[in-house]
Image: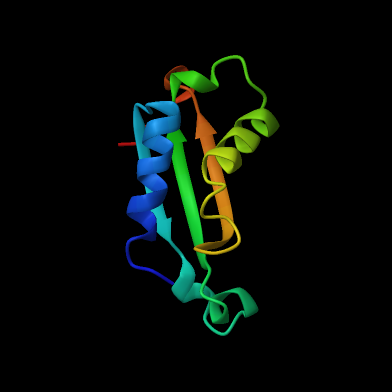
Length: 94
């Protein structure tokens, strides 16, 4: 796992969506010993609030995030959990 992966995740999502807010949490330590951890891929949780998600279903939003993170999937990222919302739906993400 690479300590710069959260920053790389954020940079890719910033470029793709221009989010109003984003938070990337590295949960890799919670999965120590997991097969993905042994191969170098980390476990991450992303909360992202972007106007680009307006009118999209949760599935469409998640597919868009996965597409934006494609360069990291299967290598730097082993597992990813997502919370996507629009500014209108925002629950107070910083």
